[in-house]
Length: 148
Length: 148
DNA sequence: ACTATATAGTCAAGCTACTTGACCACTTGG
DNA sequence: CCAAGTGGTCAAGTAGCTTGACTATATAGT
Image (cartoon, rainbow over all chains, first blue to last red; front, side):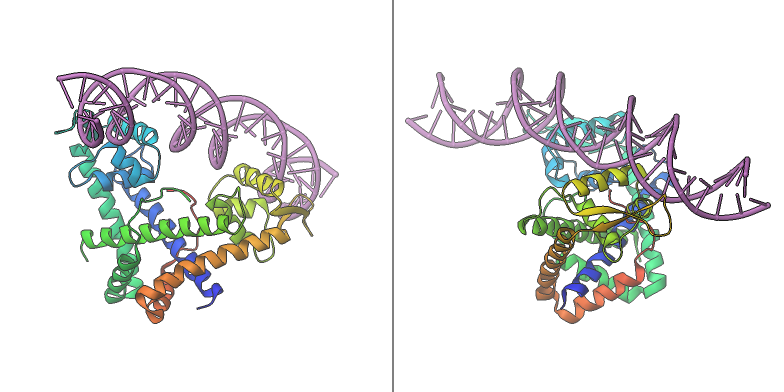
């Protein structure tokens, strides 16, 4: 496979990812959740199941824990998450989504589904499904880098 | 297709895109081009064929033209691009890559090809190729958003 | 049990890429 | 040929990140 092909693939991938990010972001706003940036969505994704510590969040986002702490401050102020004492470690705090935070996560999922639905219209469901499977197999495990 | 499937697809897509961005960035640095951020790569991509104006660049990157102008300042200072008078419009300037800028672009292509090669090892060439084709068909035309 | 080292989190200050607002130079259309 | 529009830059402010310093709790070694 030639460099030029690899570059075409890379460009397409990054364009699709950028477009999707923007679509989700706009969809979340359209559903009434304001004052959020795309980076917050990545935080929500980490917090979704059972909460996480600030340090976990920092690693997931690929930023310092100070930055993660500031982000949590902001989300607390806006009512999306709350800090709870951590069971089993008195130094740590467990950051968990509030009801509003879970509503917002659902809104993001709807917005993502909306974008994916358009892909299904263009490619058909089987192709989109296999696209997802292949992406899943090559997805890295490390921190989600929230910037490029 | 359910929301949860759409979200899994979205997450995988964004993870792959984030990982790829990081890989390219690291590869460019490893080849001796320092002081660059991923956003510069997107600028290079727009400048590559025949150059572009600051306004074009701003639209492509999804930022204000002031921000694009500052970015160009930086790239000029570091020797990657130069400002030339624009043929046919005395207000505008044509921003073009220098030799070093083209070298850097090639380095980015090599780094991208390296990452794609790993995907080929995991999925096989036909699957990666069809992945690229499908992504190309759903890629948006608008500005590349350099932030999420 | 006691000390030493590591870890979770925050506070404070500084940096940097971006924004908005103002402005000049040139182009285009009536 | 004048009015409005466009390309670009200068200047100042902002927001999200960084590094550095610190406290509180946990863990390991002797």
